[in-house]
Image (cartoon, rainbow, N blue to C red; front, side, top):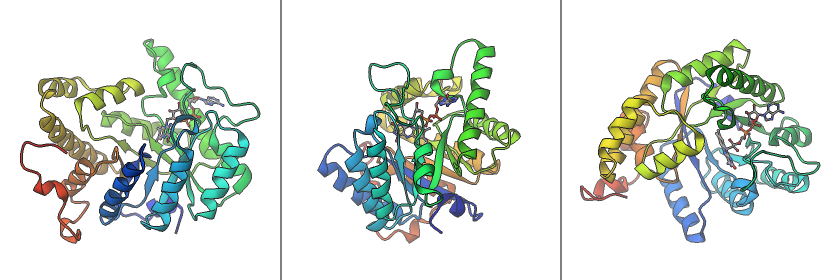
Length: 317
Ligand code: FAD
């Protein structure tokens, strides 16, 4: 089976890892060293992001090919429409198909810098999904993005309007699924109940495909603030207070992030979520520590000791 939605329907609890394309060649090689270690844990798939506006197109394509054919892990490549002429999108899709990658996360993308609203390029598409289906029928497994707290554009102070925007997003998500999306990965969140409600709401309108929670372990205070600010993520008050109290201690923040990740994943899995999708930020420590503590990976199976086990206490990676 090559399509991820079929793999995740097999019934076993699973996990998967997201990576982004590093900026330098050295960074890419470091990423592959990590990937080699991380795939020994048997993620059900790994995905690689597409830089805003196609800025990383070549690197992303190259990494996707190596992940699929050299690392031999089922690979999903993200693809966005922002600033992408149809021909460019078409050739990217032809190329990934040639490389044997069968899974795409089809996205619209954010508006280019300095622009408030998304606008399709002339003759372009408003979601990569349109193109994937048009040109390649059923060849690709197509994942789409979901927003448990609504898309950031729809997050407003007025509760009534907020509800309207939330349900409009769900209606649009349904359209994406009806147009061929067969898997949903969500935006990061820290309120597990919100995710579970989102799944219920999706099911109530007839969205029946698997919905994977996107989990971003907190690794640094600054990174957490940046991401939650950018995505307008709701941060529960207890979490905010606990983090504020340790924000100057990097190691404590990392450990807090691992504890929280374990707690969130456990709650999700106990509630019947079929698996967890971890935003690794290209680092292995937090993601693997969470999985180990959940009992989802067997450290005895790892061919070499995990590197951080040798890191003296008090230093951070
Ligand atoms: P869409 O689902 O197309 O829509 C976004 C919003 O617009 C929703 O509110 C929707 O309701 C509304 N909308 C759009 N079209 C219509 C329509 N025709 N009718 C009604 N409403 C409509 N960005 C990157 O640049 N690279 C990446 O690799 C990347 N990976 C991501 C992975 C995940 C799991 C997620 C959740 C996001 C990712 N993003 C990435 C960010 C994403 O590009 C932005 O959030 C972007 O603003 C929306 O893209 P989308 O495909 O989710 O949008």
